[in-house]
Amino acid sequence: MAEFKIFCNGTADLPEEEYEKFDVTPVFLTLNIGDDSVKHIAMDEFYKRLREGAMPTTSAVNLGEAREAFEPALKDGKDILCLAFSSGLSLSYGAMEMAAVELREEYPDRKIVVVDTLNASAGERIMIYEAIKMRDEGKSLEETEAWVEANKMKVTYWFSVDDLNHLKRGGRISATKAALGGMLNVKPILSVDKDGKLFNSGKVRGRAKSIEHLVEKLQETVVNPEEIVVYIPQVDCVEEADLLKDMILKAVKVKDVVHYPLGPVVAAHTGFGLLAVIFLGKGR
Image (tube, rainbow, N blue to C red):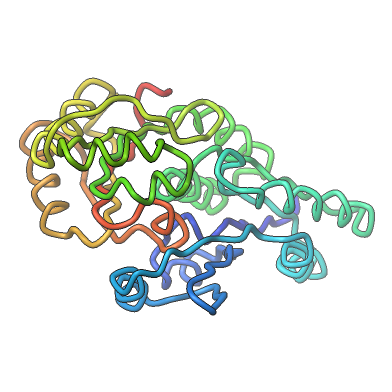
């Protein structure tokens, strides 16, 4: 059984040191901000640029970038399992699958599997951590792929956003709804559907109520809480993330709660104030 190498997209938001620690290769999307197009940016600098009025966009991984990432592992005699950012949010999965098609012809003895995780951020991270565990336990690429396919729809998301302008710019809500929501202090609650796309699942009035709502949705949709880690991505709202963590720990006996800064590629489309809970739950 050939050794396999795990790839992912940078949108999984793994801590930088974990890529080397767990032998996972990230393939980063591009952040376009002002006159710069970058693969990496410090979060402090990203926040500074946002406050100065920058309206960043993102570009998917392209075919050439995917080939360049994959080929060294193939030359080294390793198979590939790539757990890609949701196709509902990016064209990166398609480019990586196209690269796999080409490379399968050039390396017929190697297996190259690209999975559309239909997940983002901590949802991808949950899939990656289990894949690492299975690989290190000696499970095959096929067994690991099967677990991901069987469980990716169980990843559950609930998001609250504070700034409606970025959602308006991304076409998630209309300009009228953004303006009216701002005047009425309405906070939309978002989730991720079976196609890996964001959708508006409801709305509440006021930030405090939106945080309470996230805890309520967690309680409704969690499964085997003692065994799961709840992830709280946030965009420049650490104190509120701390509050949400405390509320969750008081309400539900989960294994752990981890909050972290949402990476700039996804944060570019949400703006400041995003607060979310992501975990393995009842599913979508």
